[in-house]
Length: 90
Image 1 (spheres, rainbow, N blue to C red):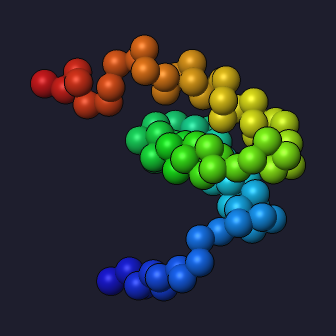
Image 2 (spheres, rainbow, N blue to C red):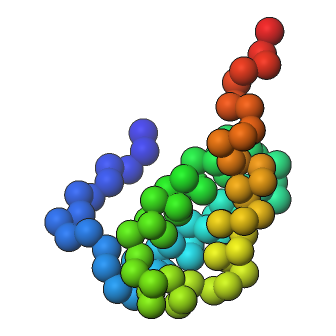
């Protein structure tokens, strides 16, 4: 049985939020390298949701390599123009 998650009383902010965004992007990239697209898509969506909450100055603090992967490279493979997962199964 998995461990129970502790409820967070306070949402992340500041340096902790930047660190969490970076961690999630790195995790999505590692899932991508493992060819695990479903897990990569899930982590990418979580990272993108957190990234959208950052201010412009906070976004600058996320390493550029991670920002590029999240916003541009991964958009090529996971964007709205792509066929949604699970559509081609027979």
